Image (cartoon, rainbow, N blue to C red; front, side, top):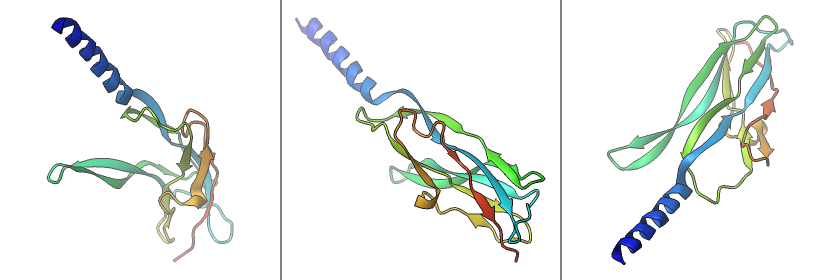
Length: 152
């Protein structure tokens, strides 16, 4: 009887762990297609455009996770000031079984060019957000900003 009880207990534990730890593809960075211009409306070539993402780092000394911003997908604007930050995805292993199927998607990026003020979106601000209620998080969400850089 004890052997049967242990087997049932193992299956229940595996089921409970499986609810919280299993691979689930999450699109966390939407596509951003934009244009960078100066105050007169002229396109700015070779401006640097950088996606800003959140990274979760474990603080081993105090035993908690810190969220820090880091820059990824560094690109330069083209002849017409156009840029494309492609959609990115990652595998999310830890989540709850009650994850909601909708999400806010944010376009967090920074544009800089020598001789101009740096433009940086406020992290997770409403101006650069879209609500998505499909099951794929930020998949197929696209932002089309027109960025105006001011000369120094």
